[in-house]
Image 1 (tube, rainbow, N blue to C red):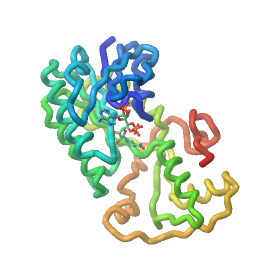
Image 2: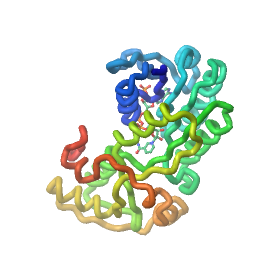
Image 3: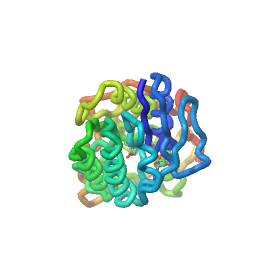
Length: 262
Ligand SMILES: NC(=O)c1ccc[n+]([C@@H]2O[C@H](COP(=O)([O-])OP(=O)(O)OC[C@H]3O[C@@H](n4cnc5c(N)ncnc54)[C@H](OP(=O)(O)O)[C@@H]3O)[C@@H](O)[C@H]2O)c1
């Protein structure tokens, strides 16, 4: 049994990681900016802010592992890149815990601002001098469902032509990260994708059918390097499909928040 800090332990992925670690007998500490963040069974909250560094020293003291899930896509330079550098510096001073970081498949091939930040975070972890493990995964079911929900609200639904997704069960990702803590530093793990690959247009049509909405769907050939990379499958891992629940099982409610409405 070891003491593990989970950054982003209040988030979509992080709260599952907290549960998975506690179930394996670890003592868990959740890093959050929010003093009112609810502690989980077997886990306490420590208040810290990656953007400023406040509280980080206290957060990492006594931890033999850190699962780094915190992110802020709207402030990724400041929080993901700068915040990770601050976290790693505090971790070095605290005796060098094993850092397990979660990243996104295709960060090196899909040139968005957020992915550039995620790639910079990976590089910072790798050259930190700390023992490390990095796992890249595809998009979580809930994240894909949120995007589809936003698209399906439009009166005419535009869908980038040729884009595909490989949604993954976030519980499965949490399990893999908790396992990585126990297994010890492993460097870059093989990229992990969900059980199925879907054209985005198919999921949009299915969403409209399921919510009883009759809207025209228009496939749009989006120009640019990001779209070209997505058409080429840079965000997919067809050769390494995870277990965990499928997209349909997620929608049918095996997962806690199928997000069908909206
Ligand atoms: N979403 C996906 O489909 C997907 C796919 C592959 C990989 N990932 C990666 O998985 C990780 C988790 O993603 P998620 O979707 O679970 O994120 P999320 O639900 O948006 O949660 C973000 C977390 O980051 C914390 N955070 C934000 N700014 C912070 C700051 N300044 N200081 C400290 N903590 C801060 C938040 O904690 P408080 O608000 O409590 O402070 C929150 O717990 C990310 O690294 C992401 O890149 C996500």
